[in-house]
Image 1 (spheres, rainbow, N blue to C red):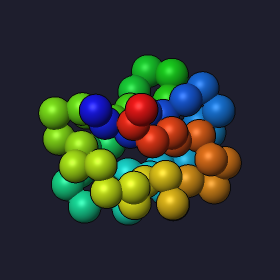
Image 2: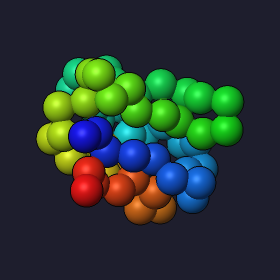
Image 3: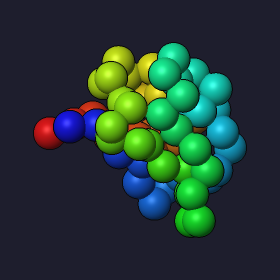
Length: 57
């Protein structure tokens, strides 16, 4: 399972800049993570200034 970006996302793009596999792109409401590309490294969650990214369950 991939990391997920919640509704707290402020669309700053910090997560996309930290993703080593370019799995994050801007969605209609906020940034989104492509589960097929996500390697679950956690870089996006560490780089999010508002803690809007949650780890896989």
